[in-house]
Image 1 (cartoon, rainbow, N blue to C red):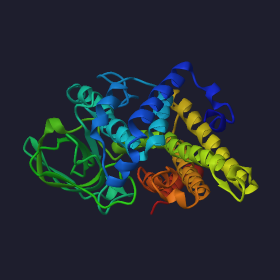
Image 2 (image 1 turned 45 degrees about the horizontal axis):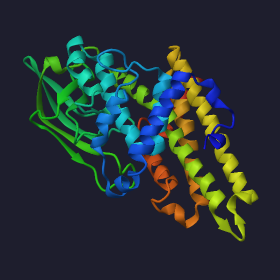
Image 3 (image 1 turned 90 degrees about the vertical axis):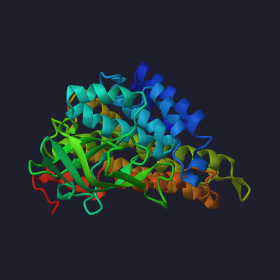
Length: 386
């Protein structure tokens, strides 16, 4: 389908190494995810058996260096995110939670001992991590979190709750953010620590081949060695969130591309009123609108990736990418569904599943409103979040 998804010859902007990585991840998605994703989604199953293969491909913490991580570029990480999300947002989310959130928190803010203890095993898929920031009453406003860490001698005691935490019920370790008398701090919490519990949120209408949980922290006692020493303010989790947001800029274009390709194929095969759908002007208009927005979104993602690799990417620029690409990806998926008619609401076709997933992706790591205000603050110099 490259002839209908490479209208501007964007492949010519990618290196041989980047194209080779794309082929490798796309092959993995085609063989390990596509044949099963409809049933995983219908049955609300996250397939943990694919984690070792993701690790073998170097996808876990792939943009981090050292400690068993692949040390890939930002663009390569983006390409991988796109190909994974062409399979399903839930599978890309796993890689994002593991690498961009949990592993990044340790890599950016942990001690050398913490990095050596956790990162090699997480890169190998032997340890699964989660990232506990969002709370039941503090989604877009993490500064108002009520989870609290209290010093007790040489220990810390955590009390509170987190919500919508990906992978928490299968995680071996959780990165938990909490208020303290010294400000917001981050902690590495083995999930078998007494007082830690995670419960899967069900039923869900989106991200069904993924796991989101409530976490309860009831007197969780930790040694000071569990504290992330370089995490000393809300800026620390935000730095991790920006890593995840960057991956989303690419990932959602994978869901959009897959939906667009499904529509192109269906329109060529479906006959109505004596001819294929793709011979109709209104059908071609929809296909063109989808293709144009897909190509624009890809150019934006690639530009941001090159800026990130050059060390020049700013948070408001990531917000532009997430805001635009999430909005356009959802529109593409919805438009693709209309071309499929009634068949489009079944799991035989991907666009409606992708559109449903993207409602979650559009919400997590910053809603449209949060990114609008982030960009608005950059333009005006005025923070209007309150």
